[in-house]
Structure formats: structure tokens, C-alpha cells
Image 1 (tube, rainbow, N blue to C red):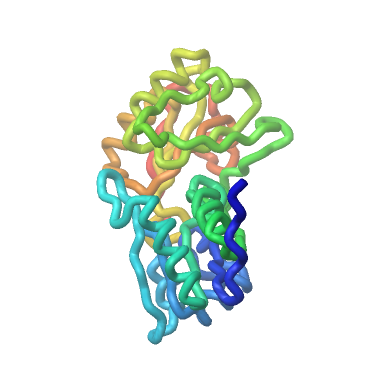
Image 2: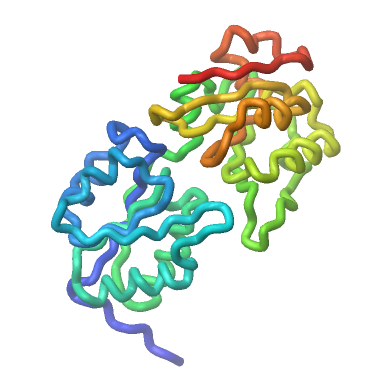
Length: 264
């Protein structure tokens, strides 16, 4: 039986959640680690104002992933973190939102642990929570949503073959990350699997940042509304009766014609 490598006396990587973009939503621990780091490996979704907290003396490594354009493949990111830990540096792996919610933090933690290095996880406000707060959409509500589901619209094999039956259950809120490129398919499949076409829905771009904007519609009308508004990633798809709770224009959630664009 192969023995695991002994932990390095110094090497430790902090997987830090940078939150949805607003630097004031960082945890105190996240801010402290960022400002004392010797190396920061950061993602595309980390807000510019948060990157400004990195010390001028620290080495910066961009490891962002955009649709069809990955600065570093995931295996190379994993190996980079191991190599930096081996050097005994103060390493921060800075990830948008929360490291363990569609951030591949679990894969990076496993790689570090397998190599014998410690890995500290620092949670961050996930994009769904930030988008809900900044738009007035409550993710849960006693009258409208007793269940909250997070799903990713971009699977490892580039498919969007989700558990459609689970996503169309009543009295729940569904938040889909990284799904804008497959929005037409997602909406079509949800309706085909029983979700009423007039179900309220929204797409929120750049939540909590100065670039934030949102499109509101029924699930049937959402793709056309998003195209008309010209929304681009990063964006979240929110689906459920709660979408109408925080916006007076959407209180009549049962009307299929519901649509609109709101800019923050």
C-alpha cells in the first residue's frame, strides 16, 4: 500500500472566496489573507477592486476561465498550487463567490492534500446570495419557495443535460450558474418538463458591481428578453415565484407577458 507524502512544514494554500464582486462583501479573514499574501492565483470573476488589495510585492498569477478561453487548464492550476506550496510561500487561491460552489475548490483541495500540503478554505458570499440581495429577490420565502436549488448550466463535458424533473418542482427557487450560453435550451427543457411557461425568471449580470443589470421575464420570454438587452456573462439565471417579490412590476407573476430590464 502506497504511503501518503508527509505534510510540508510550511506549504499551505488558502482557497479564498472573493464574493460576488463588491469588496465590502469580503470576509475579514479573506481581506487579511489577501493583503498579506506572497502569491495570489486569481480567477476571472474576482472584482477589480478586490485585486487592488493585493500587495504590490506579491506575485500575481491569472488563472481565469471564460467561455472557450481558459488561461490555464485545471490540471495545470492544481499543479501550480502544489508547486507554490512546496516553496513554502503564503499562497492565496482567490476565487469568485465561494470556493466550494461551482468554483472547483474541491478539486484543488484534493490535489493539495494528495501532495501532502495543507489547504484552508475561506468561504465567500456566493453569487446567488449576492444577486438576490442586490436585486431584492429573496432566495427563499415562506409563501413561494421552501426549497433552494443551485445548478450549473455548464457541465464538464459541455452538455446541459440537467435533472430537469428536479428543477421543475413547485415551491422552489432555482439558480443556474454559468448557463447564459445555453439559456434557450434551459428554458425549453424546463417548460417541456412541466414548468409553467409564465413562471417568473430573471438573468442578473455583474451582481453587486457597478456593471450590474438585470432582465426580468417569464421563463418562456426570457431568452428573447436577454437577447434584446444584450446581456453577456458573467450572469446568473434565477427562476421561481420569488423573482416577482422584490419588484412591484412583477407582482402579477401569473401573467405571461411579464418582462422588463432593470439597471442598477
